[in-house]
Length: 457
Image (cartoon, rainbow, N blue to C red; front, side, top):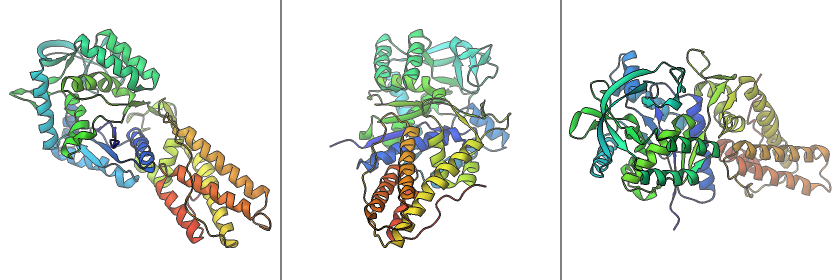
């Protein structure tokens, strides 16, 4: 019997409210999960929030809240995305959950017993934004290459995870087979071979980092937030009595956290006796009007803004239609508006109205079954939606060129073709815009036209 498909996203760091980058990752995973279910597979889909670390404690102080209260409030903002955007995940991780913390503590003891942890005094450049020490490759003019902020020189005594040559070779073999796309694979292989991650700091002094899970038997140290966070992918299964679902079939992460997931994570798994994930899918960044999203530039796009302008399925469609998964993408409001009007209001919405109206006028009852188009195997959602749009235009032309609204005499079979095409379109779009597809089927059965996507002014 085939193992149920296990899908994870990264867990969102709660030092800020949700933004479209995380929503895009969630929607991508949601489409993969819905495709699997359409094929009759059992699926377990997990997301959640990463709630420890200095940045969370600092954000709580700014809000004049205790860290736990702050974590409860912001985590709820992320959990609400499920309802707001019709996401089909099965479990929402919270790293402040005592069951998760107990699981991570047990794994730390396993690491210790395996002899891969070593106490060392370390001096290096530290980025508060990444909550990590930076290697030379991560530094640009004395600043963090990701956060573009000045680095702090820090000296402290921590526990280190030591990667032996054997562990590194196993990680290398896994990266070559399981990390996508190839550009990210090459990038992380270079980092692994550089030796920069031969020893990874996996604890922090509690005096400087009080908000975290204590190292067992050493209350003056807390676990590095990434050790805590990475084990969520298995603690989620353990908490739900689904341990046998590991290894994950698909793990989706952003390129900024690639090294954590493609070096530290497999090292932790190897030492604690787990298989490695089958696929690690790494997506790019989303810029806005050609610039990196940042609060200081005032160009952060919030999920609530998209929801208000485009609705649930409009947002789902546009993010997956307009943004690249593997490459960096550029968000432009005017381009999203143009696609909404062109492909949803004038395209799909207009075709549904035409087909349902013709079927009603000529008393043609419909059946809601049809074969769906094949799923793209490389997560090229844009290509999949491009093909759907080709069929929408082709079907629209069939109606127009044959003037089916004038007289169906001798042309009934053409209307049947149009209906069949619409059912294929609906089945193919189902993982992307599930609620809209339900509405289309109802309209075809009840022969009643209702607008799906009102045009934007």
